Image 1 (tube, rainbow, N blue to C red):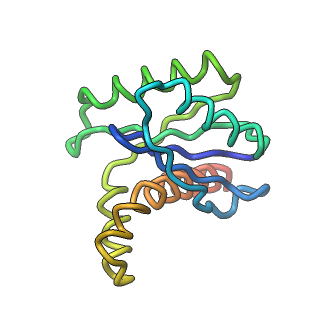
Image 2: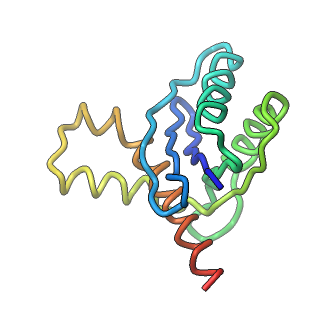
Length: 141
C-alpha cells in the first residue's frame, strides 16, 4: 500500500509520500494554492497517479483542546472537491502541533528563515504521514 500525506493550509499544501512498505515518509514538495483550484487539484491528482497511491492521509486540524474548529470544515471541503477528481481512500489524521514540530526541527537544523518558509509545510506533511504510518504499525502489533 502506498500513501500520500497532505498538510492542507490556507496558502500552501505540503505533500509527502510513503515508501512502498509504509516504513518511511519523504517530502514531495509544496503546492501553492491557486486562484483556480482546478490547477491545485490537478497537481495533487498527478502526484497520486505517479506514485500509484492507494490512500491519502490528510492532516485533521483539531484545536489544541481536541475540539473541531472552522479549519476542519475547510479541509474537509477541500478533500471532498479533490475526491470528485480522484478516486482514492482518504484517512484523516490528527495534525495538532505538526507545524510546531516542523518549525522546531528546522530551527534546530539552523535553516534560514527564508528556507523554513519554503519547506515547513512539506515537513509538516512528512510528520503527519510518518505519524500515521507509525500508528498503523502499532495497531497491527
